[in-house]
Image 1 (cartoon, rainbow, N blue to C red):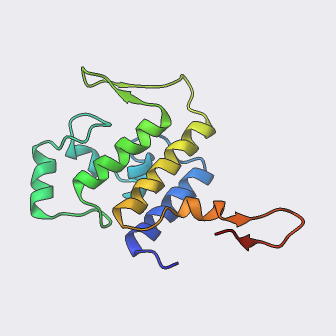
Image 2: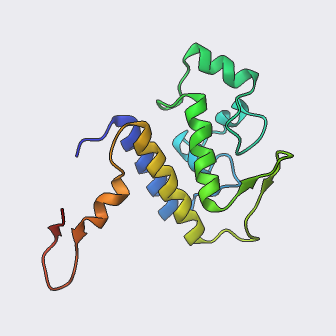
Length: 149
């Protein structure tokens, strides 16, 4: 399967961050979007509230001018982060506070966030979710890998 360059690059960065324990939803340089943006937090200035998809003045300006960070618009970046945080268990209150789901974010919660972010990234590029492709293979020890259709 041929993936668009921006999707392939984003997936590689997210997988690397997850397996190197460098995926952290509370650090703007090491969250899902922080890793996609090469561990730079410039994207966080597109909104006033972490976890929100509401662009502020700077975000709207960049969106209007067609600016991209690694192929993603400001609104797409905020949407990726919102999906990631929601799947990790975070939620945005009516007073615009981001509530942490637990004192410690474990690997399972982080994996749920990673899967949701990957699903959203694939949807942005119109590609079938790459995480679902692994489920189609029958990897029982008795048989060789075979594609289940």
